[in-house]
Image (cartoon, rainbow, N blue to C red; front, side):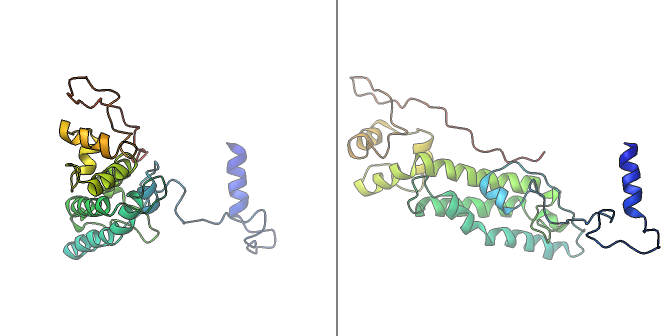
Length: 229
């Protein structure tokens, strides 16, 4: 502790000649790096679902109405890109266009609901970090993206096949119904016959001989954490 104090005093003091040390000198004051840390909550952590810290420093806004609109607009403008990435199945094929559309709608609703921050502060600072007041906003957006990524993994291939083969689960709610295994007997029978391989992640392990199809609930892998430390 004492050594650290001495070093701090040495670094802050001029040299014997009374001149300031050059920045590269060993005894010069440390240079402050004001760029976001690896833990800062940014658009990249929002996309990836990594743990992060809300470390932005933002000044209060005076024009709250304009600031609230700007906050929502800022996040909506990146919604398509984030949803496009979230809706891309892990197989590397193109993003599921139906899932992208659903994601964009839910993302926009979340931005409208929670990201205006009443216009009190900017939602993101000049360095791209989310403001501490944006915790609820960040979490709601993250939930949309993580749910979309989960559905892209377990349901996209199945829903795309169902749409092509005319199974009665195609449509806007297909991804949710498939990923949550909320399907009726007719839909399950069609998927089993027409899309067995594409729907293998959600098909029942077995079914009774009576033909009473009941999906076996499986526990999905948890999504990445998205809170602050």
